[in-house]
Length: 430
Image 1 (cartoon, one colour):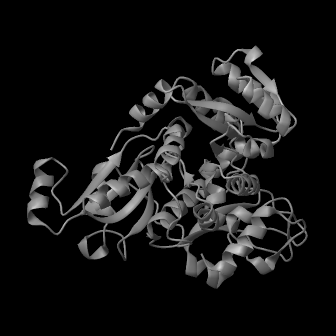
Image 2: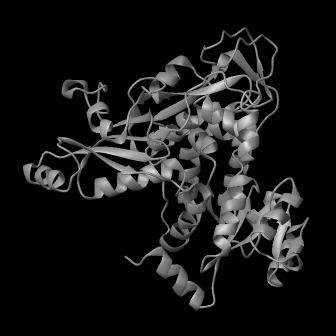
Image 3: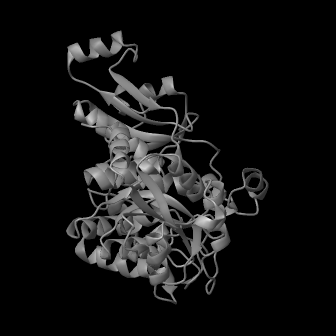
């Protein structure tokens, strides 16, 4: 198999490039633009963001001269700019999904309903779609995956995002016939279910990050969502609602994240989990029934067995996204996708007491956090998926802090694409 680096170099040598359309010029998007600008065989040709000045800044920080950037408010303007070898800045992501020159769309907004619209329009317009938006994926990913397959385009999560990095370990271990017991990630801050944009403001300012994003890290929502994506891609499940969230070092993992009968914490195998103390890494716990294989693993200093850890100590977030772009374009394959349908669900839980008539807000906000359940458990609870939470959802009865929010406890006051697609997905039983 030819490496992606050599494919990209050969593609550029032929005078060609993969043309990327990026939606979202925030922290993730900006890093990706600068990374791609230095690569062979690929170019970010257009960016959409509600703040067009942020788009222009992203291009400029990547080293693109201002006279090479064209603002476009229509598809015709964007296509003309592309023909003139200009990069396009716009506030309308629909333009990107319809541009003649764009091969692959990347959604880096992190907003579930925006991600739903971007993915849907990309698929309808025969563009590959790379989701740096796990919140959308865990809500309607199975439907989008089936739609993309039918349209002969690729729907995929991103390399460098933790689910994508975990999937690469899974694919490696599965390909050489290890039994995979658990898949997981480190959490790099203590779990604080009450975290809000206000409580994390100082940290967010220091990191120049969106406070809602930092709050979603601290309250565990991001971890729950990421491991739900892994579950839906692999068929693995949380051992208990919310997972165990133990603390430990990398060396501890092969003794902790194993079945109870072998001295561990799990009641089953094929589990998704998170651990405090191994961030920012991802891991797979493996074993083998072969005596020869065990001897070889011990010889290679992977431990005393019979369980071993494969550990990757980094994930480079959006800086690795170009690898998924290239894999979709050249190989027509996803990095990670919900091929097993809905195996797990991240549901909305009240972050504080909620009163009848209140509006919910959003992920990383003041009203809810996410918690992972097995899909059948979430269905029994009639639980509201975390990706359906927004300002247009109104509480219909008092809900206590820590209670799972159910469909019958809320009302949607304005139709959204993600709610519509979720209903369709549930009808199709993906």
